[in-house]
Structure formats: structure tokens, C-alpha cells
Image (cartoon, rainbow, N blue to C red; front, side, top):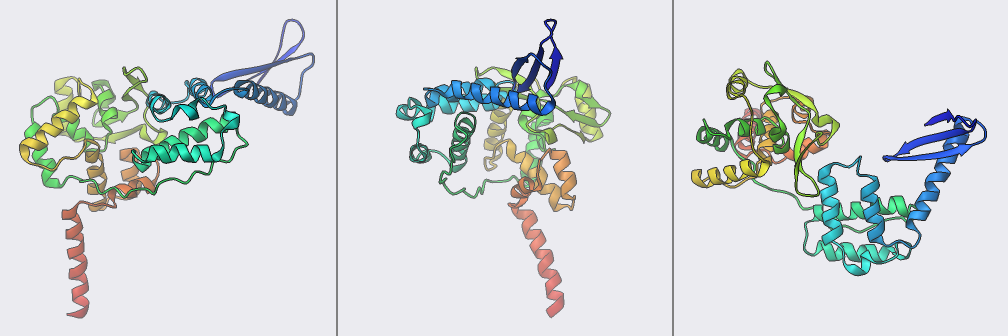
Length: 332
């Protein structure tokens, strides 16, 4: 909030909200409470003018634009994809004031028939965000599909060891090892040698696709994702000797991983599962959650636990054997 005196003697109140500057000019200097109310009135006036006679498509498009300086390029791309592909014409062209809860439920039902529950929830989240700005009085209470328990394959120690051995000396060796240290592939691809200081690697950016399908550098996914990790002497020396970490795009290293899995007859898993492997392995050897979260850039322990809840089968059996052995001492 800024209150300044103009050369004319009038006073101007300015405040930036969601990247948009709102201003009011007065003949007198208002107090802070008056200034806040004037800006709130101005904001409501703009909201009403935007939504008057506007379709859902118009409001959704405007929402993306006014949030452009706040949303990540990845989110903007996802929202535009939903806007162009997820909705039927009757919903897009309907006046936002005329849309009922039944309409929203119907569009969500239609979309959920051919999409995963998580993607459907993203669609509902987008709809709710648009209504929160352009029709905040409407209560969005959609019934959503039940979440599906993800039992995706998490690599074993042997899988990872064999992949590392196969990739040794290749363009992809360092990148794969960093992904197994908990990095997202977008974070790994954005790194350069200047991010390494001794054994400390700073992760503060990511390489992602924007709405125009151009690769761009942005900040990390969350505040917690900006972090520093310790890497081994061997890995640090390899980075310094090469002079770079990885000169390529995320899909290139993923394709290499898939080809390697085929050659080694290893079950297919995504590059992101190396991050899950990092969490599961760290948890299995007794590293406290707070340190795993810090190294991997997880925001909450709930997210972390959902990852290592499906601990690798070999470690799971090992832990169960230790429990069984301990219990047997009680009744032997």
C-alpha cells in the first residue's frame, strides 16, 4: 500500500494485487483503514466489470492473464491446455453468472470418464480458482473421483547399481546419479558447474516447458525446493572435470533411461522414481525425516511418507525379518 501526494495537491493511493496495480485519487489524505477500503471497493468494481456478461472461457482466460506474473510457466501451460481441451463448448460459452453447480459437476463427470482422478482434481481446482475471482459467492462443492492408490514400481538397489554401471562414462551418468540423490529432472537439467561449491550443490532453478512449448528456466517448484545438498568427492570431481552437468532436455535423459532398462531387462520406471528411491533408501537406513525432506525439497512429511510408504520390497522383507527374529526370542 502506497499513499503519495501529487503535484496538484491531491493524494493517490496505490496497491498491487496479484500483479495488477489499483489506484484511487482523493482530494485529501486518507488514513490506512480508509485507503484499504477504497482499494477493496476498486477491486470489487473491477471484478464486477470483468464478469458482467462474460462467459466462463472469457473469465478463465482473464484469470490466467492476471495471474501470469505469479503462476509458474508449467502451471500456465497446464491451465491453457485444460481450457483448450477439457471443456465442452456449452460450458465454455455459458455466462459465468448462469453456471450452476450441476453444470460444474456434469463437466467434471464427463472429464473423469477418460482421465485419472488426479488430473480430474486439477480440472476442478482450475474451475474453483476462476470462480473464486469472478463469482466468489458461489460455493463449489464438487463430488470428485476417489484417489487411486499408486503402486508404481520403485527401483531396487540392484536396479540402480546396474544402471549406474551401464551409464558410466556416458553423457547421462552424472544426471542419473543426481536424480538418485533426490533431484527432480527439471532441477537437474537446469544446473551448471557454477552451482557447485566444493561438495555443496545449490538447487535454485528448474528447466520447464512454457505455454509455447519453449524450454525456459524458472524458480524451483516450491520454496522448500530451493536447497543445498552435499555430494560425494567422486561426483563433485566428475562435474568439475567435465565442466558441466548435463547439456540436454529432461525428455532426452528419460529416453536414455528407458533404453537402458530395456537393455538390462529391468522393469520400466520413470526418472522421477529415482527420487522416490532416494527417499525410500534414506528412510530404510534410518535417516530422520527432517533431513530427507531438506535434501529432497519436500514441503511436508505427508508428501514424503506417501513416497516411502511403498518401500522397496527387498528392504521391506529385510525389516520384516528383523521384526520376526526379535519376536521369536520372546516365545522360543
